[in-house]
Image (cartoon, rainbow, N blue to C red; front, side, top):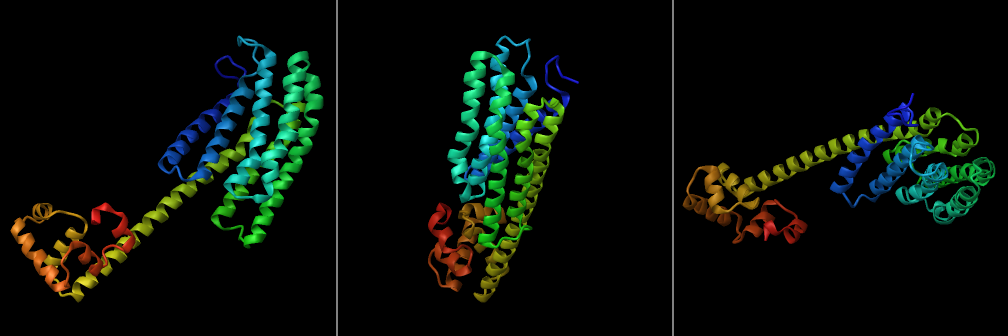
Amino acid sequence: MVVFGSEMHVITYVFVIFELMMLAVQLYRYLSCPEDKSLLWYLILLGLLIFYNVSSGLFPDPEFSFSIVTQNIIAYGAGFLMAAYFPFYFYKSFDLKLLRFQAFYGVHLFLLLPYCLFFVLIYGKSGDLNFAVGYGLIIPFGYSVYMMWAIFIAIKAKFKSRQASIYCSDSVELIAVYCAVLPWACLSLFAYFNISQWIEVLVTNLGFLLLTILFMAQSVLKARVEEEQKMTGYVNKQHKFLKRCDNFGLTPREKKIAELLCTGLMYKEIAVQEFISEKTVDTHIRHIFFKTGVNKKIELMQKLGFADEFMLSHNPLYS
């Protein structure tokens, strides 16, 4: 079953729509946290997967205005480009040093070079796709199998070097990504035997679907943990602040005024919030300064443990 009168199978279309949604979500996450480079590498991976699904799903189609040869070159190129990115992705995202050669040299020699030779030059000139597929996929298939083995060895070495447990979160993510890309070693066989589009799409995309769900679950869990840590930190900070206030003999009203002052509020703002006059605020603050033995707000914050030295030196609110 195809969609919109094209050559794209409905299963391919569903995967593309879902992956576009995931791309938008991951792009938003990356723009919110651009220092997370591993998210950038995954964004590129997801973008290449979408490009592969669209090109392999739509091409070749005689209804398009450009030639079948060009369409096939693009479709096969998307698959080669996707496969060529895997070693680089693992190398950069998970710091697998053993994959440096594969990431920067191996894929160019054994994947991209055969593609350019057989599919771009020979097929582009002769139009004989059977010849390009029959001979142009021999080296890439052998290298794909070797590449997956090399990635496995690199993962194993990383675990061994840091004595990592396969149950820790980052290790589970690493293994999940590896399992997701493992079926791509069969991509050359799919092309050689002309496997149906929907079977190819299921095999190559299902792992990424599960991987995206895993990433989303981890994001929710991470956000929850961070929120709990913030709440715990706030409670500890509040407890420390109140305990020091008690040590200096501050009254409940003075504790509140001191807290508002340390958060950066001006006398007028404190007066409005507490429904008292600025003169009364000034009187309370003079009493607070006297009891704590300070003359400045920054000294009061240090005495009451409201901010550490880093915050005091870097946050203009406390200057």
